[in-house]
Figure (cartoon, rainbow, N blue to C red):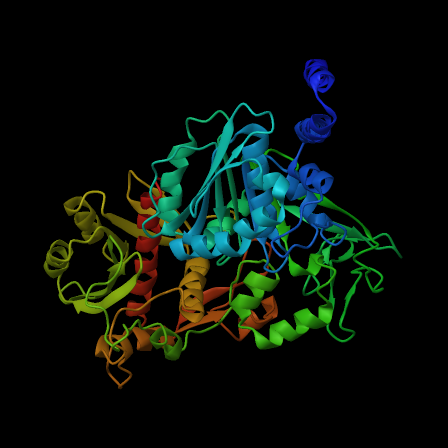
Length: 575
């Protein structure tokens, strides 16, 4: 600093009065910029950077944390692996923009920031990122490049430049040319998982090599929920000001630590303590993030953020949303939780509603997707085999067909160029083995189990080509997919094999009508005398499970098709 002052003093000594005024103004500006740079270099995290500079959000409103104290720790968390289950309308994407800019400007980190589509990127940057930059001249002054897909900032020390490359995972921008230090996966569950996993390779060479993913969740054990399940699972605890009962907040009361979780009381329309029942003041209660697991948990730092943490969102609003929203939308976007319908049946209307038509009302002739997936259920007898098939791609199903010989199944596999097949292992495992031998690497034999300790829906043994799948969970996944619209159908709604309901006909809809779920409606062990289908788990509780009350082959083939889709998607991701 002394050298800089000597320079300015020398200029002042030689200047006339008019020049002195100009030089003094430049000197003050230089001093202020130097102090600002030095202060910026001393900040330790994005939270300090935001608050010290009094930054504003995209609407020009000062960034405040009095009502968003639950955001501070995730904002400061620079773990190499970060997973956030998040609700909507709490400003998390705004926080992520500041966090990305901070890493550009503080460390010179290069970042790949992904959103589901190119149009999402355009809307996100126009409505949020660019507005934040315009509202905060201190940040914008550091900018080197400001295009639609690329933002770069000179570091606060002035000796480096950090880039953020905004990419859609569906569209022309979904390339993997850039290398980076951090991969940020915004709206992870609704993005192209194959492209996201390809981006993993772009951070391998970095010494930092961080992955941060956050999303409104979708299904259990999928996307961000799967990663969060592997994390330390941090919950935001509130200590009741009246009785000091510590708990996180849930919508419905859940058993927790000698009482219940804090929750929404629908009668009083208030958030209440799970122990004493007193109204819980979320602003004044002591609170902090508490990990469920203290061990390493694969080094993943996980957070669950719900609208119940936002003190400006009342219990009355949540109760209203539950009434007006579809159950999956309420769970994913208000509660920040993965959705499982717990439906005990699948109505044909929930299958037919997912038929995909183009703008002219026609079924697309070519099903979208790169890989052809097949599910096969065995039926019939030794002399008269029946092979029930549901075919499609990783994007949906496009054919329901019954074949009457194993030779025809082999030919069908060749003609349709099947990339992945999952087949029932019974009653003819030797025939399934022959199929796997004839199509190396393309066939798995499915065996159902009820392994509750396995977090994944399935696990495969590459030596035996046997796929062990949790029966209840995979059934729930397919049923939920139809109910929420995730499972697409590229078959005409009037196709007999899809929707024919006439007596004696076999169709996907008829066979799904035969399936129902038992054990999830409050049954007790005593009810087993009345219902032979009820089974107990290891703890002696009734196990939820799907049972059939008639022919169900096509529904099982549909289940196997979903497994084939999951396997091929995992291979696409390089896992």
